[in-house]
Image (cartoon, one colour):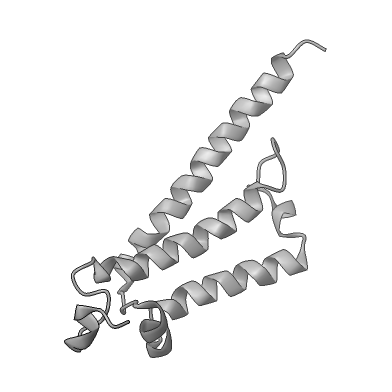
Length: 121
């Protein structure tokens, strides 16, 4: 069933913050990577070189990053996902949620480690 926007020749996302879709995809893709890295241990930090010991995980994270970039740059993704080109500054802003997630998760792990050390045996 065609929507009114479709019948007018406009994208189905017309009037619904179409400009936010590209940064949203980048933020989601990279936040998934952060979650994958952080979920490997309940209390151990992910900010070590041991985080990158798994070849499969490294390839998966690289693939996620490449997809995040391509979603914002390739016409085929623009048509499929309703994204638009974004510049380097906008891409940088899209990194903020993933960086904040990493920082907050690491703070949570510090709190968890302290709680484990304080707990009576």
